[in-house]
Length: 519
Picture 1 (cartoon, helix red, strand yellow):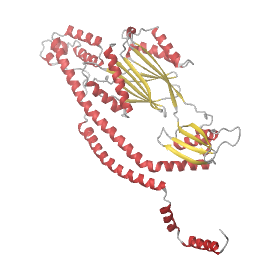
Picture 2: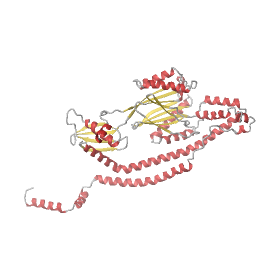
Picture 3: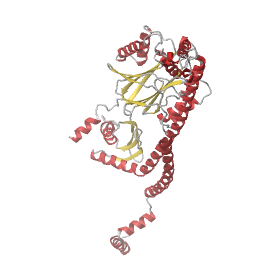
Picture 4: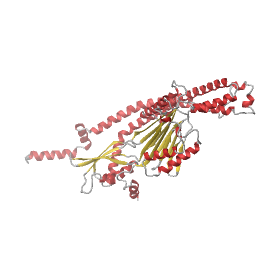
């Protein structure tokens, strides 16, 4: 453009307009001509969030009403049975009533209590032994057994009715929790990523780290994912990930209070030379396990079934089920229970709800007197917690040096509804802990139970501290134990070792970084 009067006149007019027109008018013109796409998308997301939240809250009120209706009005627990069984009607009209139930009590009340207990456990040999003792002492044993069966049937119906109500209540509670979580996520998603990204960028600037682009792809606790663009290494001895390992990882740990790891680092040349580093949440613990399983008399079918799997990288699930007997039906029962439990967990059902749902569903099966125990545990690899639910399962042992922690429960097997409480037990885990879970076939019914348990734990503690692999440890424990006691039933033993995950930057402790900064 030539340097003439038009050139200088256009500069003067442009300067006058720039200085006289208010900024708010120029901003309106700019927004009309060049709208900010991020603001439009954010406004649309806010509008959608408000409308969907309004609809969900209405449905949430209905779910809350149904939950309170079931819990408060109909969730009255059944009256627990007395420890000693009352005399049957046949006994009240019998001429030997005083001999059996009076001052000359010959133990009939204890036999009937044992009969109900053995029916719950489901051991045919024990049931047959108790029935033979009742026939020996009772002159009207046939009518007594009819009344006992009727009473047992009535208790199971009552238990089934209670379980049905409790299952519905728990499912409504789960639905309410899912809706609450969904509403909270929808409200937070519009601002969480922006605020989190700004916070991280500010912390990196304070540490004099040049990050020209940072994106938070996921902000879910335990599953966070962050991508950061950095300048490449400037000296030969420094790798592209050195800065991330030594400075950025401790900063992320301090911000989110959870460990991170470098998933990958990619060198890019477009639009200019830089390095893209992807960070993700790291688990604090890892689990190594081995399984020892054998069937009675080395047969093809075993009543024991098990499953060990990860629900997601930070949560490890353990399932152990023992069906009644050693037949094909017992194997089918335990495997079906494991399969149903896995399905419930895959659909994010609360473990307590899943346990009660399985109790109810298995109680409606067509086979008579077919039950299965369920030993279910979750290991939180992020925070080092063990959650345990037991329905007729054996004790779980946690070996911590010379200390032994036991997790026990008195709940009935799945499908037997006389006892409805399946409570969760929580234990804090430490690096180096050894978890042992087993079926009841490990201990013989002939030898003393306490002596077998002490022997098994003694061998386990002796071997757990060695430098052998976990496969060698479990094999050594079982070989040593079988040298003293014979295993006469289907047997399954699960052994798990909990250890810390040590990242490559472990020399630079986040705790040391935060303490030095605060000081």
